[in-house]
Length: 281
Image 1 (cartoon, helix red, strand yellow):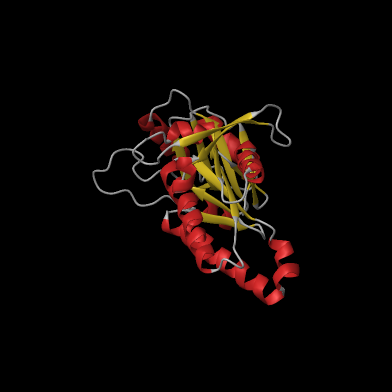
Image 2 (tube, rainbow, N blue to C red):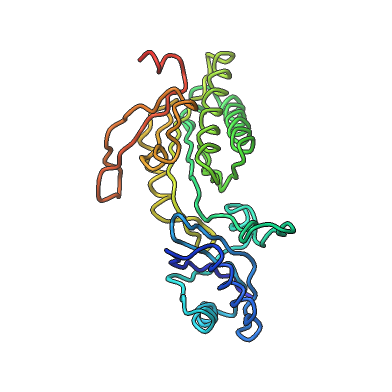
């Protein structure tokens, strides 16, 4: 049976009210031949998502319409493995005894990070295929390590870099800084064949369809990465707003408003200061 993810506007709805509405859906799922797998609730953004097996998207709409009337604004068919890779699970975790409502339901909010290795294609011409492959392997290992050590998940390998997802801004920023610092250490030991990476981050509620991740959150993160310089970490204004603790980073440096390809208006960007040289500059 196909798998569908729907999106609801739940602005003004409490976690307790949301849990009650979901319980109503589950109670009638057999009638509509629907099987709910997991739910995500984001009170701050006023959004919720349901993952369910269903004969078609209309069945998903009908069950919500009959139970509580909050019909989803979108219903899309999704790939189960991609959902798991991006959101970490495809079924609700077991709630602990005595836990508050929604203790086992996480938010659909994600921080998207793109990385891109500078001149990876030209490396084969400059150093030869064998050395270029060694550099690519070192890049991949350091990237995956930085992502996984900071609770991130690799969404996909883009050939020259990675697209990854994080549940918190702090984890995403720690991952970006860890990667750049590890690459800097690698380059000190391999000064003749350095590896330089640009990093871009954005935060929001991305959507999945037909086995891929898309939406403005992802698009902006990709564009920010393309805009960045080698060895640079650039983030959008919302990332800065969600993690503006001076005790955590030395500073965010204003990188100005950037005209990014395909976007209707300029985007305010900030650079993460991660080296002593940047602090002095």
